[in-house]
Image 1 (cartoon, rainbow, N blue to C red):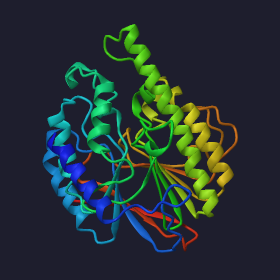
Image 2: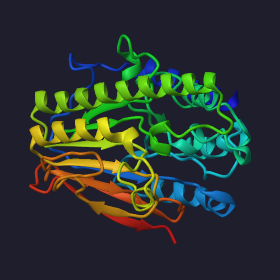
Image 3: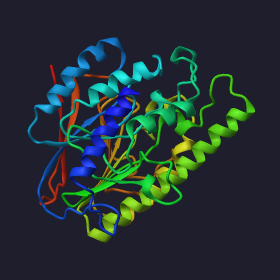
Image 4: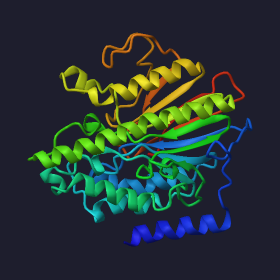
Length: 338
């Protein structure tokens, strides 16, 4: 496919010119106190109007001279549009126009929910394979105009499938992207699901959840080994989705992950920033500051801040500033493209 060929060419050129010199920890270590700025996108573009606006959004991010990396939290389209190669390829092609490195973690709209009739009644696991092949052609490098070496879980024996889980260390912060998606982390049944489908769906979910737990541990292990000033964890799913809570919908597919995050963040003790998309409305809170009845977490975690990035918009993006020399390591603002 043309998109995959482009990605492979970029990745191959990068590794030819600048082989990744990974430390024993599995990733390059940047212990400098140099500040950095990251652009965060989520749940975009959604629908025809936002697809028209999306090139301007990319251009606006490119024009910001402070941005050194772009993070997309998944959902490359809305939940009622086709999951075809061409439809998803539109967003992939425009993301390739980013001048900075791109880290992307998959969302449910581009694979988990593709069983829906209005999405084209695709096999979700086939769509997941397509995403991995297209957007992660060479595990260990980002996409975008200036690829960056990262540590991919796909390079870990026993976890070769999970090329999308990546980790890097920069400005004295451990950054990690973990594949956790909406639809209750894929516990939601597919349309007309048959017993064989249930087995396949559950096998994938359980394996991916196990990989996520391992990756969260690896991220905090690295932070502790290096005496990091902070940790950033990025995923698609809103594990405390207000709509689900208000309507009694299950969120149990996230419980083990929420508990592991709570345990590791509490033990780490320094600032932990958790990025999520999925529910679209911009939100900053501390869901674990007190007892959490959603995931039955009794001990508070006051140092974990959760950000639900602005979603379902192509006219705003989230600008994160990282400065390990300051007591307040993470600061941010919303950028309006209009």
